[in-house]
Amino acid sequence: MKVKYFAWVRERIGKAEETIEPPADVRTVGELITWLTARGEGYAYAFEKPKVIRAAIDQTHVQADAAISGAREIAFFPPMTGG
Image (cartoon, rainbow, N blue to C red):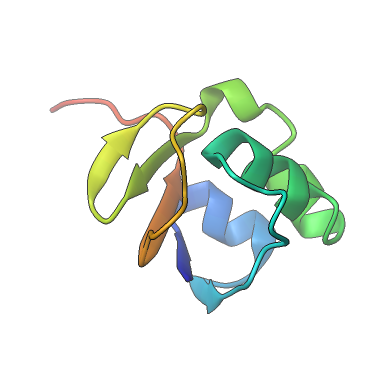
């Protein structure tokens, strides 16, 4: 699946997107965040406060307990403000 990172999440990880294959036991967005956090210092820094990270699966906003099975794209971004 393709994973996209936006704003300071992208800056901390050091890339805008990547293609990944998480292990079979990673089934939800929250579990994916935990798995990504273990991939290195930049990921750990980007996801140090997972409750503030927003996610979208195939361009639909989802919660941390959303299943990632069948997802083509998952995006992670910080909270947004209107304007």
